[in-house]
Length: 234
Image 1: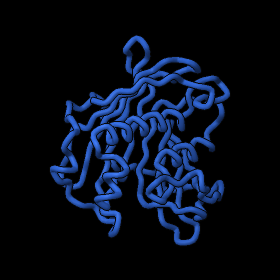
Image 2 (image 1 turned 120 degrees about the horizontal axis):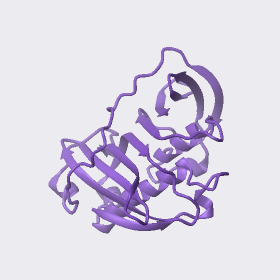
Image 3 (image 1 turned 135 degrees about the vertical axis):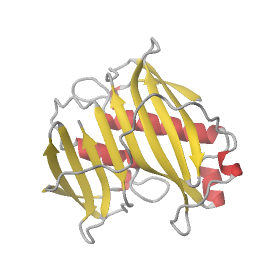
C-alpha cells in the first residue's frame, strides 16, 4: 500500500468550500502515479520501455466531501494483475481514519508504439505489493446508457488538458462532465468508461441524458464521431 498525506487547499475546493470532483480525481491519480515512481516504475521507466498504463474504468463512491483545510490521507494498492490488466483501489481517509471516498479502477498496459494492449511482465509488476480488494462493488466496465441523448455543447481539447501520454488526461473527462451538473449537485457515485483518446485541439461533442437518479455525459469526437468516454453521475 502506498500512502500520502494531503491538505485540502483553496485550489481544491468549489463554491461550497468542499473538494471538487476534479480535485478528488487529481488526488487519487497523484497517489497512483507517486506509487509507481516510488518503486521505479514511473514515467521514466514507462517511456524507456515504450509502454504505459491506460485507465479504462473508474468507479468512485463519495461518502463525504472533504472541506477546505481538512487533512486527509490518500492510499492506493493494486489487488490483481492478469494478462494486460491491472486492478487497483484508491481510498481517502479523514483524520479519524474513516474512509470518506473509495474507488475501484481497471487499467490496461499498452505499447506506446502500436497503441495495443501488451502482456504484463514480471518486471512490470515487481515492486507493487498486491493486497486484498477493498470492499467496494464495481458495477463493471461497461456503462449501460439510455437510448436517447441530447447534444448540449461542443468544446476543444486545450493544452492544459493534455498529459504526458499526449492525450487528454483521465481526470479531465470527469471535470468536463461536472461542468454540466448543477452547482448544488451532491454526486455520491461516479462511473467512467474510457473508450478512445482525445488529442490537442480536437473538437468534442458533449451529449447528456438522464435516467432515474443518474446523469449520463457522453463525450465523442465531432469530426469522426468516435466515442471518447461515458461518465455516469448519481
